Image 1 (cartoon, rainbow, N blue to C red):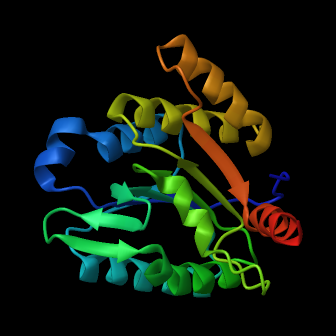
Image 2: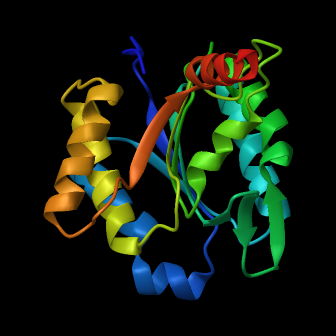
Length: 208
């Protein structure tokens, strides 16, 4: 990812976990406390249904209309196909999220960063349409496999810590990988990719 010359107004955390798991794992709660300590503004919303997620995106579109820019943090169960809302047994497919993300990214002049704290979150890159430049995000941070809670918490804190220190995301992610391996992982947990990067990779593969 190239370095973005953007000042974000806050981090928006959309938490799609059941309340019992929010209470047990405290993923978004701990992240919110971390951001508070660092003086970073945040907005947290709990979404226990597909409708609630849609309403959260509608609110963010209104914010983007005002010229407000934010980093989007999604905490959820996930599959290769999208998000899974356990409370209502709802699947939200990546293709369903695509239109909402495209609108947000367009209003934010292609500066939307999406950080996925979910299993298989990196699969969100597949919604990039290589035939157009109407991208759903500038960049996506996500895991290619199932994600453990402790891994997600470390990734989030190191990610935002790095942004505070003005580190480039493409340089920050390898540092996070190294720290996770020090703490017990045996593989690469988190990756980053831009819409343009995914488009380039897909086109290169298709041309072979």
